[in-house]
Length: 152
Image (tube, rainbow, N blue to C red):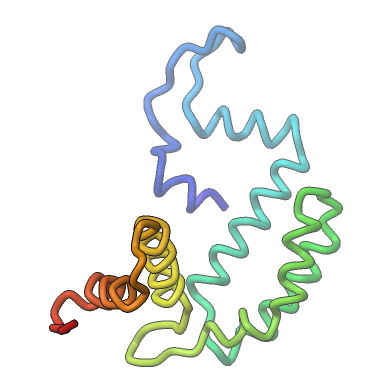
């Protein structure tokens, strides 16, 4: 359950004195206290962990069934903050499943295109003073493909 937290924190660290609780606690003790006091927080954390596990370890063949199960769990959780995420999972169901397709040992995503779009937007913003559109286009092409050569 606490696998993701263990990547960031050593939950079994040396206990330190906590003034509020007037006793020595390590991170695991604090997490246990929080989860006992706020059951919705525990549910939200467990759902988040399930989605992370699903996203990292599911194959294309298992994706549709696994995502359907997750959609049901997020919908039945009763956590208002997850309502928007629940709708996202429903609306982008097909795209999420397709993202598990592996080509050249990598999953398909649009991060490269999004990065290029961001670079172009920044260049256009910075090129506000260009009066020659051909020059602005050449500048964008040069910045995106520095290894290529261009002439004006």
